[in-house]
Length: 116
Length: 111
Image (tube, rainbow over all chains, first blue to last red; front, side, top):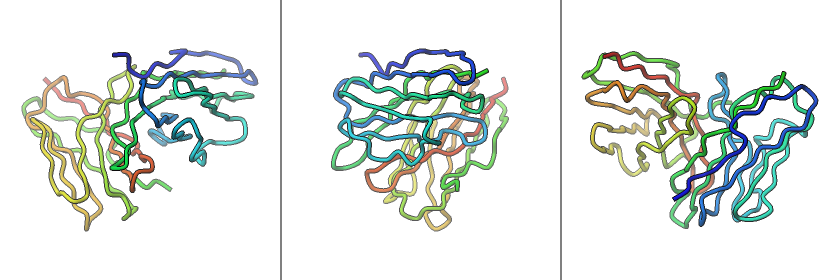
């Protein structure tokens, strides 16, 4: 079975450019998360979708960041314009949220972003 | 405001000995806790979890202990193996909402 699929795995771009990261969650999962990993803050939750609806975007750093989930099998995280401090590894994760709890998070392999 | 804290960024242990990784939290509403392991260039993978109604959960070489009064949990790995070398993240959630992760502890098991 395919896990969470993220693309691109690596992205190098110049400051000011638009960056789009993509995620395909595990089929059947109803919750999707975007995390950012940095040395200082560890795994930082950016945004959480449930049934394709954004529930909590309080972790999105600023207006330069936006995320969408047009359907159950696809999500994007966009940074426009990008800045060097956005350099990090961005993870997408999905889970099956049931009445009893959030369930185990399954992570993709991450997208390593470098903004020069 | 870090609600989940892993105060040791790194830990080195001799193969065969016990590894103890610690995690502290501040939110008394957290009722479910997990540990994830992450190898370089891979996503984190689930290791073990514990509900707040328990104080211990064991799975093979891995045991998680929860001390609710101290708002502290720990992961014990016995015996430690070189393949256990990775970054370990603890995470916590309240109700069915979302997981908050710590900053991670890098474990190195020396052969």
